[in-house]
Image (tube, rainbow, N blue to C red; front, side):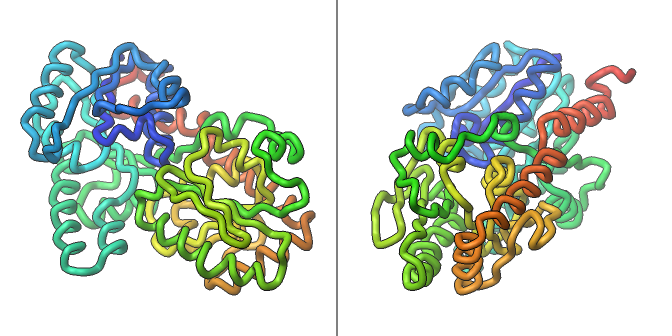
Length: 381
């Protein structure tokens, strides 16, 4: 079996939740056969980006030349050349605006699978409810609907997204599978002791560290960054000077103020998580599954989150996560965990077990193999 992955946004080599999901599927498909990749030209790649391409036999890079992909004839022409050369049994596409043109021209001999990182139309309606946001959302709704209808199968990352896609676009539930993703090394690697992790990053061993990370290009993350630095952190600072917040991620502005250190992109996120006492997820918009939430849970640190941040995760408040509804509740829970570290260890331990049971690569591989067997791409036993 040969599979062509089309990473229209280039997320395959980016430190984003979508990138993690694409890489997980590519790893699973590489164990079942040969995989090749088509993605945009990426001008800056770090060593982790390059190493993520090791599974692909061939990597084809296209230059979008500033033309939106959903109306770019050069992009479509490049795709047809790659398909003609590779003749894949399966084509996996992601992101509706980049999948729209090529889904209509995928050859009949290739099984077409659409990977939905998130229910895009639903997210856009939440992010920008104004007129401009509505117009963008309606365009996305058209593209997403066509891609879901034309594809032979759809992969969603949560049951909530699966149900929303089915209801909005009248797609049969039997055509949508759920594959829950995580980062394999985060689940399998032993946690680095505090002193060692903090020594690597130059973080004071005396401080209690509260972490949030994410791409600054994602509007919900921007809102969370502002909420932490402008509202939650100041409340905590008034009550306890030994608690510090670290904000990190691609495109994040670098600054320091009182108890907040915004450090920008970090190459080794696992070290940063292992050096932290807890994490916060003050997100106001939900959808899909927040891979950063699974990052934290899989490393065994307690997380304080909004209900919206927990969409797609069957959590138990007080057992494997702490739910906060406003800034004062976030501050109170942070201080409580600072004062009762044993409680934090218990919650972090339960969170890790939940992640192991529900988001392991073994479980994801089982789901993918079942899907491909049902689609008759893989032979049944």
